[in-house]
Length: 442
Image (tube, rainbow, N blue to C red; front, side, top):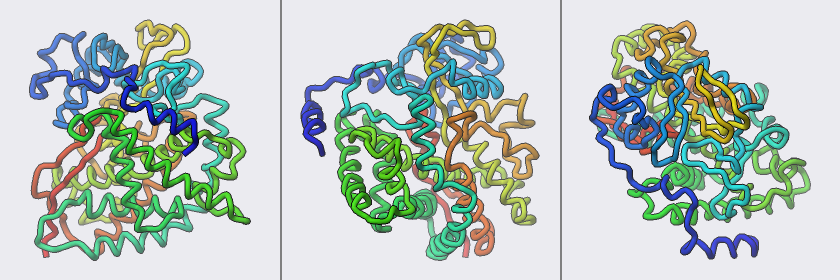
């Protein structure tokens, strides 16, 4: 770690985050009927609602009564909720009006404007940049996700999925998230970074840490979480130096960053930020769609029967899983100018939150949106990957992993039974499942 970073890290004990309200507990009754709460008091971003899986009725009410809704008082400060499909698409495709810049507030609830942020706690990444920097850095890693390269990975993914599924117990309860979802995505991440497979669990750990920094059950203070994330930098700093010393550039994400004109001179916190972006993007979205898809099939047994009768529905089913689960619950933006959205006046510097999880349940876009339909005709036209210049770079890789996993599962099993309640992630950013107890009948 550089001297500057060491100096910054030494401030951890006395450093107070400017947005400490993000981390403090705001009491909420997750079982309260959202229709009984005054409309102006609705705070759909409360992480406890996601942990209890009670948030969808909040968005249902907002779509009906206030599609563009201002929450003036929350642990995140004031923010606008955008809950209808077309409005979400408008915000996402107008980066000239709505910024992703981390110094203006970034892409998550809780981000605050800070023109001179502390590098210990500020981890810039290209998804939190506006053009031209966003475009230049994104272009560096884009070759990893071309159709040709994904085709080259397909056999490897199929081989790994088969090995994972063959190793599962029969007639015995186990956690599907840990044994299947995490394993498949972790192995893929290690391949993309070209690091030893035995280190894949470190990647999963850092991905989990990045989503749990504000959870008081995991870290007593946010500083603790950031100190853990800097261990990720230490690991990948060594990888960077190894790749930089190679005579021929490798075909992996770190080599691309090392040799990319827009990324080769990143400071430590920006390198860490971009590595975490690639880890979370490659892990959380795919892993939670794998878990959420199996849960949904068990919640809609007629759809499971439809799959058993026609495995050819798997490619479309994968898109429906991603719509139904909405693994990225929201993306946030900051208004660059005074503007108008859905008849509401949005002021410059206002925080605007696109609720992808709500857009995917918009009945103006999807018929019977709260039902899983694996043969849904427009399943692919969901909000989960975003729109415009920030559309998910690895979306086709994620779809491919889900498709192959289910193709291989159908060769081996009949129904995979969910035998207990899922445990959800305490986060309003990643709509995640931590535990899913299942059993595979012999």
